[in-house]
Length: 216
Image 1 (tube, one colour):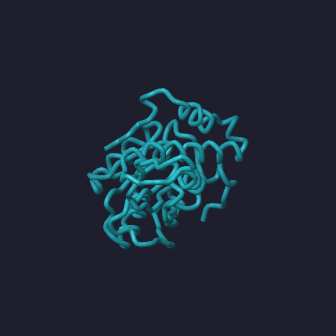
Image 2: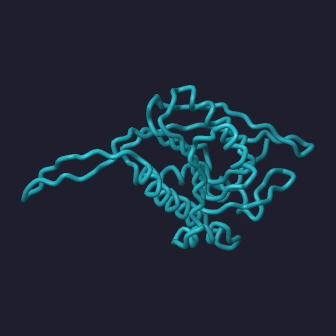
Image 3: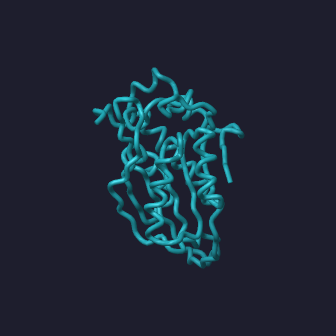
């Protein structure tokens, strides 16, 4: 199921507007902060999908019986661009275990590229809620490879993909392989360039957050 949060007006639209703005993008700290705040709100929204149980807690004046999350969670992120988004989610879902994976595009002189996964650090995800975050879903191929690698560590109870911006093509691609997954995005862009960059998008989220890198 696709959850496109821009369909209802909220402060998330302001965060995304600033992330898209090429002038505000000149401040990497602001860009990272907006990704982090996006992660916090996404975590709150996903928390509504979890199972809950009653917990009795003693207060100074008596006993309360709130409903609290019962699911075990694993928060996974794709390095390096996903780190601020991941940190925002972890600040809310602070009892979650964590997983990290490196998936990157290996570019060729003719403009084509291949996606490589060369590092995975993950606990068991068996029976847990697995949440994979990456700021942008373009073709979906990088995230599909990342999910395949993480699923080597067990069969999760639920699977969630989280991003700030997704291309319609990438969402459709992931749906084919993970039809039961929930997909969370602020906005959905329709166009991809020949080099598979999202239009209007926002550029390279990793570079905007952490500085430009040299292409191999």
